[in-house]
Length: 284
Image (cartoon, rainbow, N blue to C red):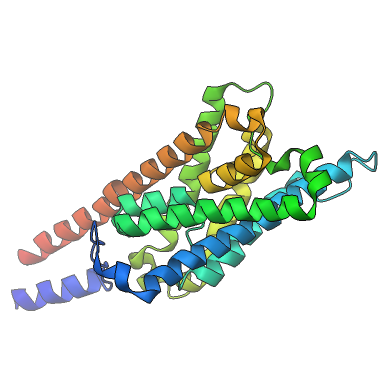
């Protein structure tokens, strides 16, 4: 009787299966086409992301500097929508191929949580950075005059803010994004709410949108080292490089904190509760 109760309790308390941790170095995946297909998907997705978003930033600046209606154009709200909307679209398109990272900080966080192997994480980051550079290069090639005049969409620390404030904004902003990613792909939530996998790109896109609203006035919003690097490489002006470290240290720190919080506090709490339930069931 006791065994039946334990078995039933275990089943009812956990109706999902956590995927096993990814191997630290998986040599076999380097020989599969799916691995390289995922790398290509990350490259193309980041290229498209930077092309649309940087073009939106430059287009807005060109509109407000022509002496037209200062309220004309897409505004800061439109820029935030461009970044969040593109992430929603691209995560939706690539989630089944590469996981839809499109951001070295996201890849880093998932690597720390053992969701991806080291070779995959490195290749994704390289592909994302190259894709970002190519995406911004396309913007410059097609709109060279506006590109040079309006700053190339490069991230810079705004006047009136110190480096500590900028770093803090990048850490917290990236934490919000990566925490949302972990929540969206949580197998426990997916098992409980079957619609979550379908809607996963939506909260991720909204997280990017909301963070941009908050931090565009401070850093122009990085939260994506590939985005910041791509714009800086192509624009290649001194100011774009002055604070480049903020757009790497901040996002990677925020991603690490989010990975730790989700994996070792939220998920660990669920495991502890499950163990306590089993313990109490044994004494029935």
